[in-house]
Length: 194
Length: 194
Image (cartoon, rainbow over all chains, first blue to last red):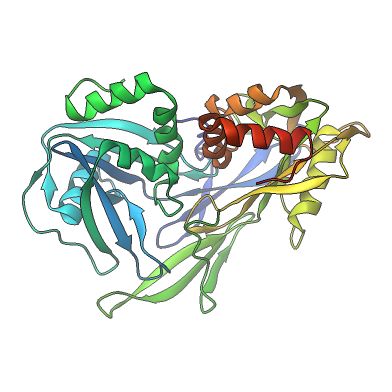
């Protein structure tokens, strides 16, 4: 799934560091032998969770301080510096929903934008169990509710679904009955992910 | 299709301007009344073209100076400063393929990343006619060839297809026979785009 990821070359220089984004530049040799300044960004990776609770999946409705309307999302968020994506996924699931799981598997690893070093890790957390009250920070208002497998896949039709990098994968499952059934069994029966 | 676009607030400040990306920041009031620095980017918009030549569509194979392998793409590129997206689409089509059209329609307007002010405009250019030799700059190696409508839609399965923001729309057409036929007629018969 790493598709067009090219990364930032080792000789690039960091020319700006913001709150989220770093800007890197380097001299790139062109096809005609000339040189131009190329630019690419780096930002913290994202970890998100398909959280299985019984025969359902946790979907969220979320607001952020600058959002103009609520939007649909999955539990997840930014990885802290040097934080392993799985650790981040577990932390975000607990903070946002109060659920925990001891059965995790990585489903997709997507680099959404070729000019940004940024990976979105989507984990499956099977057999989630409610442990404590959710506790989100001052930048989030989140409610979660369990939805059916089909309703989860139909989130790919929601123009306000916050995980655009997953939409094509969800549509592919809707296109292919066999793959869809294999994925359903991976979530609810515990079969290996294909 | 503007989905989660939020834009950069008018009171934001530009804290960095790179070759492609600008970084903007502002003080955002949080849900608890506190204030945090929020950050968003701006970059030039992109214009790309579904170019219809007879009963085919122009698909490209492209290399860039820092790409590790060739990738599939559609004609298109960055809009110049203050350049209208349609003007940019016509310019890029001519530069990259040598084709022109006098029958253009906007198909999709997508904001791929919520934290970046960046719109990808996808135009349909019907009845394209070859006018002159392609002329690409030193940062591109491009060959184009006409492919069938079905082969065009199947580009959505190509992990090296360079227009990820189109993949979900192409998959949706493959999911819905009626919509697919309407789109085919919009391309080749000249029916209005739905």
